[in-house]
Length: 132
Length: 132
DNA sequence: CCGTATCCTTGGAGATACTG
DNA sequence: CAGTATCTCCAAGGATACGG
Image (cartoon, rainbow over all chains, first blue to last red; front, side, top):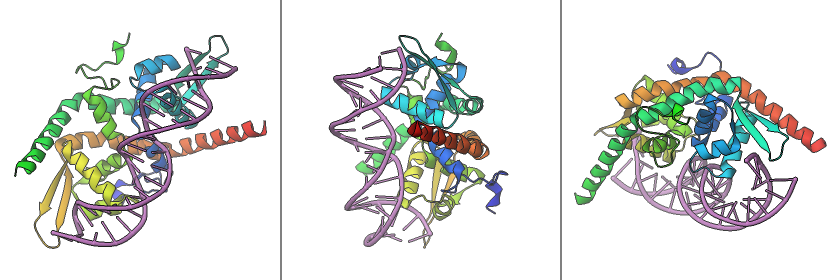
């Protein structure tokens, strides 16, 4: 039976045309992960985010924030002062999601050694292939 | 304080060079999500996966499975019969992760309507921009 | 049936410089 | 400070056909 995995909402992320599939697609981005995790504790300014997300380019940061704003996960507030001040915070929906994403981040940190080892083993086996 | 978000493992996914960052990068793929969710209930053959993951190309399916195998999340078993039979199943580590990923999938299905609405609103506002 | 090889297109993503 | 504008590059990812 296939229905064992069906959600009770009539949505099915395995189907290419299902709206939930596009949601999954949007979430499948490391910057989306990190931005949402970064905002979990409260609102942050653009520059604070830029410093926290090591290696993100201004372009990607803005892009990611716009996507999240468009999808109702992040709210943007502009203070009309000089110099400009813009703050970002999670919406209810975003906070709801942040808990889950943070578990994934936490899992990544917990199991990074396991995966590093697995990768090392895979490389070692591959070297075996070469010798053999 | 920045340490509020630090894990007790010494890993920090926000740092570009941290191994956990590369793990997050690997997980940030819709096919990785879906393959792991698909295998959650038990082992599946290549063809079964191909049918379940609507729209995946043979190339991406194989690629995704190889990455997951390399990282110790999926185990591959070959039966030396004709026609060939190959089965995939989650390792312990993979099963551990599958619970979390499935929550994300479930969340995507639950909140797909909310996000669809948010996107519609965003488009509407953008149209307003054009008129104004 | 399982997978690889090939070709090709798109857009993700970095670097940088500039404007309000 | 926040953000846009370009330019560029490369790899993700799709389509397809073939091989073991």
